[in-house]
Image 1 (cartoon, rainbow, N blue to C red):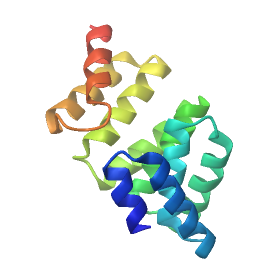
Image 2 (image 1 turned 120 degrees about the horizontal axis):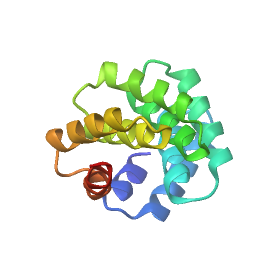
Image 3 (image 1 turned 30 degrees about the vertical axis):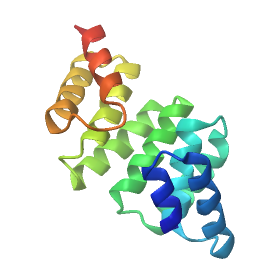
Image 4 (image 1 turned 90 degrees about the vertical axis):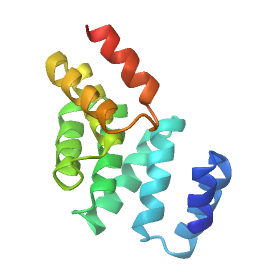
Length: 147
């Protein structure tokens, strides 16, 4: 799992995935590996059903973990289930109110739902919190498009 996390941080995603899968081969119930693999599958592949299975499994084991809620929200977003995604993102933000990427995910979700003022608010909050997160450029472009 740690090796996968290191590869993830270095943006060597295929190597990260290999190690997350290895961790799950050793312990199929290891929620952190399931969560990280689910996120990767949701944002970097078309295997959204496997991502959903893994994210739900992780959420069952750790229902209070905001990182897992965020991942499940991303999976729901990718599936077009924006109401479910909103629930997960807002739940995650209750525990991590100053997390830029979760605000970004929520803002992007609001935009898809047509809730444009809420989208701007969440996206602006993400940009206030950080200028160094995955999605930073997309957030700036979305805000510009919403104005």
